Length: 150
Image (cartoon, rainbow, N blue to C red; front, side):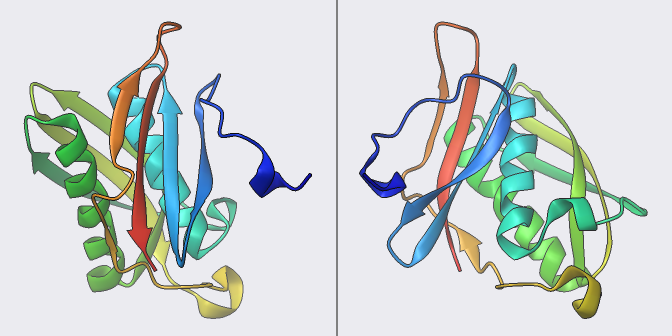
């Protein structure tokens, strides 16, 4: 039995992972709050491009998104990160996220891309509505997931 034959299981602790989706890639973050789940989804986004541990949190930038629906807020958040990665030519490894009443405010930290050190694998084009969900389970864990176009 291969990993792709195993049934998908809900996360049991904060963290992030990827999930397969045809030619694209799924990102998923889990945490004790929506903000922590969104931050972990951002780490998963970076991990598509390179090893997040290789990205030093040298430069801080602010990100703001306003959307009362948590699922749509997740897409806005990830697309804001993708935009900043492309326009600032940076990678990010630390995400301090606050969500209050449909307003996401975050400080993201990272550094300029260094091709030899970071070895970027792909460029992420955008977050999609495919497999989009933000859920809260009985144990109190929040999960935020969607597919990104690579």
